[in-house]
Image 1 (tube, one colour):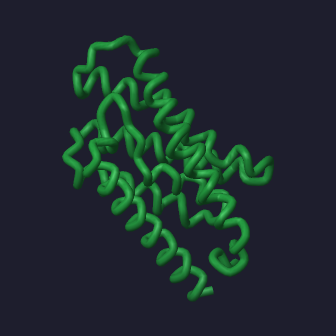
Image 2: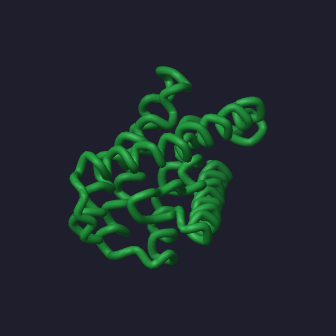
Length: 163
């Protein structure tokens, strides 16, 4: 019982660390924030399909990433909440279809992040313009890259994500 908690905590911490590193790499190329975002770290949002430890890992990773890349306070809060909502929903949907793994995060970020871009950063384009740009970025990072990661991990899930 005790080793399960340690394993879960360690897994969550590793996911948070990976999220931070991948976001920082995206940030170096100017892709981690702004109207057009393709965070490589969003590929990790398929992980709640494999382990519930990914939920707090993604949430903490997003908070730390947003802090370290200089995001505004409201972006740190609500951007991280968007990732948390997506992670919880992905975990809930894991018994439905593997193809649904990236969808909750794509939707939650596509709905929430445009409000942050408009009201926190003052980007004046219409909400639906930001919704489309965030949706496209999330589809590339969470949908395409996420599903590539998903299929790689699925082959080794019993070894990587021991119950």
